[in-house]
Image (cartoon, rainbow, N blue to C red; front, side, top):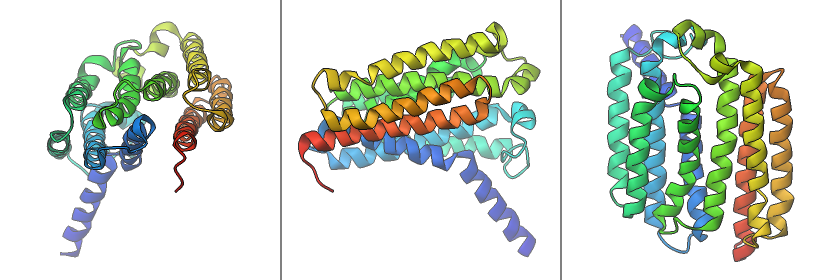
Length: 290
């Protein structure tokens, strides 16, 4: 009995790990942020909650299905993941991902049509990512970048403000910064990807060239971060916070040529700091006090 209880606990822990809960919750926070940046919560609290739940479920499902398809690669690159170490069976991971996808669909049904359209497109992209896109040079990176940035668009669409300028800039900034981070991660994983026969960008064009491409993309993202201030959407508070965030990302970019594993984590940190700048910018403009 005790042995069976330990096995069930290990399986439950493995299922939770499949979702990468930190990433799933972070994606929900980004959707929440997109809604707030677009509207300041002038409307749609129920829609915001539904959008956040849909994002968390969909992200968890996408991570689980990615682990299912990547189980052989993970035996080399990530042997501590739940499937390679035997905590969860491949079939169990597949069924779990389907349940999470269904949860995301149910949550999204109460949202406006624009938000539902984004949700459907994202679910299809998540399902197709590993089998169709991941091994294509740069294409998989672009898909992941879009999915990350689209969490902000999804939040804005949930409150009926899909065309909000700040939300659109936040989408572009997040997508471009994520694209750079994904390229850096591919450099980090190049040994396992080459063993599996994948044709990622660093394998096809070489690590230095791939990193230079990532550098150009991030420079565009940093330039785009100035737009809300230049357009007058946000004021000085935003500028004072987004400049240090840009500095963190640029410093991480320089480090990516020597230590990609650390650089990609710092890029992620810089992205969240930039997101906080957008939130602070909206707070300052609306006069909200928490």
